[in-house]
Length: 249
Image (cartoon, rainbow, N blue to C red):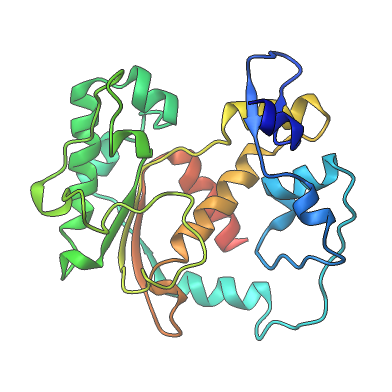
């Protein structure tokens, strides 16, 4: 802990000194004369807020041009994304589906209903390898203090499979064959990280954060291919609203 403090890696939120955040030393960036970050919706990311808090100058990178405008990309994507709803997915719409709800509030019956909702969409795939879904990683490998796990039919619950994909997955083409997606996580920033940035005057917009994370997750799939199309079920109403408002705006 002392070494991490000496490297300026360990910090506390003002509201609660026991709420600690670990991050890479800012010197890793300031040691460079220039650092280029190429990503979408950077302004709403944790990294952007972190840069602002540390007083690092950030300017828009304009030395490359996109092949298509943002409007053109969303228009093409909207034509190749089919939103799915089943009787099982409708049954879980009133469930909160945040990380805390999953680990501290949800009953075994509710988790079973989430599993049934995931399966009801997954079974629409022509090939089970086309499926990918997400929910909190704590429920994929539950800790002893909760012991909770979402029960899903055996053919998509293999621990070594690539069906479950972490909600924060970025920068990979390995999943570009996935055509049936189920997003079952009402995503918010980690409480400690959000509190830390907010207490120092750089709050994160939770909806913009959730949108950025979800777009990155969805774009790991076949939608990233030139003619790829996908079917998707977004179980939490908040997440579905945020994504559709962005897509059709």
